[in-house]
Image 1 (cartoon, rainbow, N blue to C red):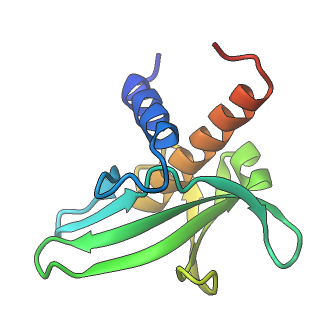
Image 2: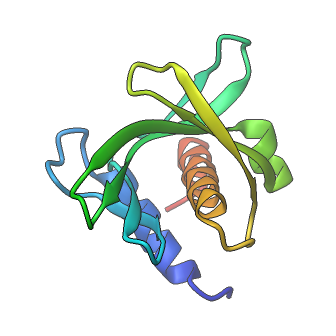
Amino acid sequence: MRNGTIGLVSAISLFLSFSAAAGTNWISLGSTNDGLKWEGKPGSFEFTTTKNKAAVALIAGRVVNSKTSDIQLYKWYVSVADCNNNMGKLVSLSVGGEYEFDSDFMFGSGNVSSSIAEFICAVADDSIKKASGKSL
């Protein structure tokens, strides 16, 4: 079993089990040495489509600057095709759904974009398995 897999599975279960009104509980998705923390909002996961009809897995999240206490809110998504390829683009949207920017990711590469994308894709995979009735 890969290092961190148990923690990822626990985080996915926690992420899916919270309701949208879970209060201040956020799941850590990554951090940097300069005090930035990326966090996902439990209960926010959904499958949806873009304006171009691409199927995507999406979560709401935030970036917290621990030095300035600044908090930026986002929606992040990864296309289902990119999840299947284990690499592609992590797209960042405003809370209203407008495109802001995207970042390259590759599973296991160690950067924050890759950690967020890998988490989104793992939650999507878990959601599909549960919906198919094959999980306990």
